[in-house]
Length: 195
Image (cartoon, rainbow, N blue to C red; front, side, top):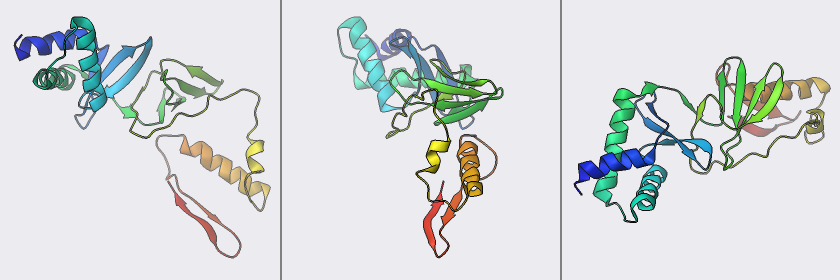
């Protein structure tokens, strides 16, 4: 089968829910896997493996490296020239008065945090990417208290604890002031700058 026909076939087999690009031109595919939505860069090894596996499952044959390259080129062109421009986030994002925290679990769930509380959701309205080495966060449980954190910190006063909590909350926001904190003992610094 000619590479162009195979590329078209791979594109159809992949059944990408959405192809889009970022402001910098990086192409992404939004795909459904095992009932949940995932966002992958089209040029990634993982996406190429997904195409290879999809082709094999559909045909019982292996697509050549040239056919995979051709399919990736085709999907990237569709994402860049026909797809919409979207932001892609790492770990946290904000939209419509809510903060979304990517749990980085195998089901691609996130925590939606808003004025009325928080919820674990399966398909956040924002797009997350997962860089190599990103580890999953534990699923939050109701009934806890931020006050528990204070026993792990060596702080001089309640006011210092309030500042640390404010910094932690600000770190969840995708914009705004710098996310740096400097911690000092009375005699010398015990931790450097954290970003």
